[in-house]
Length: 328
Image (cartoon, rainbow, N blue to C red; front, side, top):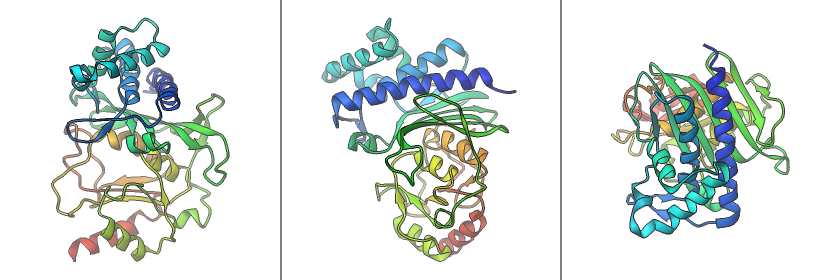
């Protein structure tokens, strides 16, 4: 399958969600709420999920969506003003939307993994979004456990990291077997991305999270030293890291569990779109044991521990260094 219908719809939906997110950020600033688990969530998280789930429900009503948010938090009496705000921002993209529509669309993201399903993170990197830094709107299609399509909108990411003042706002698009392209959020022709001509500095550079608690900092630092990557690393919030590696601007993103034997597992929506974007550009993504990520077993990567995402060239070297550290 070419997945042309799915691709075009997903690009349009992510573009609309990006417009909503940027409007919210400009008008609401750093305003965020705390979910029961104490993680931050914004009006934009809910609005983006509503917009994308509405598009998917309209075009592919049989496809379940496994997404991060649900409307229960918004529907509580304490958050009635926030629900009204979400509805207003969704109406800027879908004028006919009612509050009931918005909560219904958000809750369409409460689907379960099936033979064919979509997974969505409406804002990956909410802390970065609130801070005014990087974030990603990440949507992926999975069939029989295999990633088929990934769309990743990065509204704050420069088109070229070596030119920080260059135009910001890109969408990464990857289709299984068809490679990865990058499109400006302002429109224009897709640009193919392939890991063929990485410059010397970028080929030895690590990219990691701004939030140091994301991963096992001590072991990750040791692995990076073992394989000879050149400091300083790039620090970027969100799944945008996968796009930066896919463009050849960094060589490695590594996220190891703390402790290494931790039973905690990553959410599928935090990695699905980024994984296919990087793999179709010629990179490689596995867990810390070298196993491909398994998107067939639920909302979490239950069969995988840790994440290693690289330009492909250094992947086996990284795996060997990680294996040595695990033994210690």
